[in-house]
Amino acid sequence: MLETKLDLVVVGGGPAGIAAASKACELGMKVGLVENREVLGGIPLQCVHTGFGVHVFGEDLTGPEFVYRLIDRLQRADVGLFLKSHVHSIELKAFDEKIVTVLSPKGVQRLYAKAVVFSTGARERTAFEIGVTGERPDGVYTAGEAQTLMDLYGLMPGRRVVIIGSGDVGLIMARRFALEGAEVKAVIEVLPYPGGSMRNVVSCLRDFGIPLYLSHRVVSIRGGKRVEKVVVAKVDEEMRPVPGTEFEVECDTVVVAAGLRPNVELLEKMGAALDPATGGPVVNETLETTVPGVFAAGNALVINDLVDYAVEQGERAAEGAHEFVSNRSGSVAWKRVVKGRNVRLIVPHYVSGERDVVFYARVKSPERRVFFELLGSDLKLYQQGVRPSEMIRLRAPSSAISNLGDRLVFQVRPLE
Amino acid sequence: MSEVTLTCVVCPAACELKVLSLPSGEIRVEGAGCARGVEYAKQEVLDPRRVVITVVKVKGGDLPVVSVKTSQRVPKSRIAEIMRATAEVVADAPVEIGQVVAVCPGGVELVATRRVKASADQRAQGGLRENAGQHVLKVE
View 1 (spheres, rainbow over the protein chains, first blue to last red):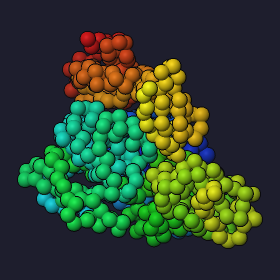
View 2 (view 1 turned 30 degrees about the vertical axis):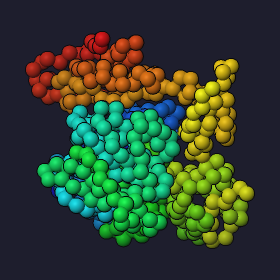
View 3 (view 1 turned 180 degrees about the vertical axis):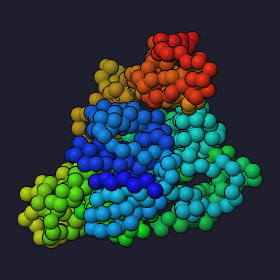
View 4 (view 1 turned 45 degrees about the vertical axis):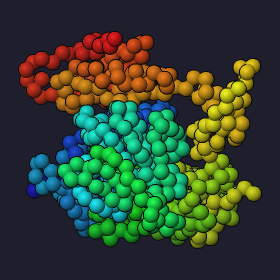
């Protein structure tokens, strides 16, 4: 069996993984990067729209352009690449010894690593997970499938389209279909507000006159061989369909854009604690999970709005892994991060107070004119408006954290 | 005098803007929380522009299409026309990122945003043109 001794194995070669591998290599670690596809880059490869890299490169790039820049950086580093390789399992041999078993074109390989970074991305939720029933005709795609068909292979999935979900992915696909001459009949959103940013609601739907149905859900899909129509109903506050409000929309294609869930199966098997709010692992300020020496970054950690944040997390995880391997991470009295008023999720979950920390948070419901603040400190960020779809990023200096007790409460507070 | 309502997309606050075009030619913006919102509203009313992103066909590549964007923001009213023109474009592989693959009516350049290598078949036939970048298609 092929065996390789490394300092760090990075699992997943999307933006977070590429950033983690490059950074770790620049820090002098011996790094292996495992990717199950034959190309590096992950999901942005199929994202032909702009909006990538505004923070990292100071330019508004398309997905592939962004990825190529990251890969250029990786190529200057000396990272061992394992493409078309699948991580079968990770065994914890000792505190600083993990055995990553990889199925690769060269056969089964064993990678011995002191630390592991998980950058395995996310998966799309399916129609079954959001309670869409009915028949199972051809013509039902997830947004990512439709995007791959259109933008990698140049194939139109259909001509008359209903999109389920108004997150950024759903909105961007609505625009892609409309631009290519398809008729986008409706975007159906179960929540009373759009799931994506207002920027995308305007530039993807209003620009093309696409109707958005808020507080509605697709209750069933009808059709024999091919989708013929969907049945849509209004929902009440508990998101249950209201009887008698059903109407039909004729279409030949249904695109399910119902959000993403972090890919955490392997982490779960290793015993890492998960946060039900993010779907990802519980982490400390170095993005280390509850399994020592195992880190997480990108959408495997928390679903990000911006690829720039995934890259930032990749680099932070690499720094954390470097500290772990250098044995500089002594025992710490952790302070717990607590969700206060109108905070749905926040990452990281534990901090030491000994260093600056970047927090990523989402609110529960939209609000205007608010402060996002750390209770008992001077740290506050004024926001004209907050929405669940727009992640809040806040850098907290250690001075704001260190004096506080063992609980840090973040909250959203209205100005008035 | 005409009146338009817009949602500002400059920041997540998403202010609802009322834009009044006065007979004097002056544009008045109401509801903006900041100066950037006023600028946005004026631009949107006077000369709305967008970057168009799409894919065009590729001959002899490892992928059948290449993603492209317009080199600059184009008037919103011309998007449909540009999309029809891009449907006719066929680029030759290999396509390099940043390469101009076609020039649409009015001189709008379509720039490749992805790298498409020549397919294995194409390479085997020796039909590979080394400098595909110079074969810029004109679409009339």
